[in-house]
Amino acid sequence: MKFGTGFAAVILAATMFGAQAARADQLIEEYTAFIGEDDLYNSNNVRLQEPWQIVRQDRANFHRFGVSQRGDQSDSFFDDAGNRELVERMISRGTIDRAARNAVVRGNVMINVQIFRGPRGDYVNVLVY
Image (tube, rainbow, N blue to C red; front, side, top):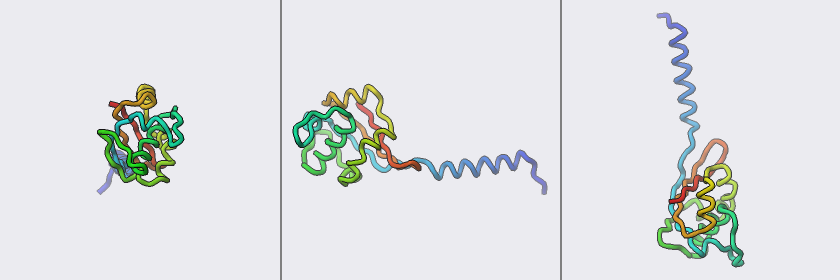
């Protein structure tokens, strides 16, 4: 049986699609949190100015200091202090739009954090609602 170039192209495309699917980013964990007044200040009572600092402080408050607000959910990823140190890099690799950045810095807002593992490293997407 002889196959034409069209069949070979279909096989090649299917192989490439399968390889891409195998490399797809994986959602590791997702949680929601309320960014309250306590999350806007670090342990030295200095007002935080960047959204990544506030997200990190929220998780430190939750996991290390036992401080949480109504709506805060637990996560296992940021229970590890080393992972909390990576928040800045993870947010820079992920997405947080300008409106969400501003809302996080102002505080008193619910956020949804999605933690992904991708071929170029872990990253987070932060949504405000």
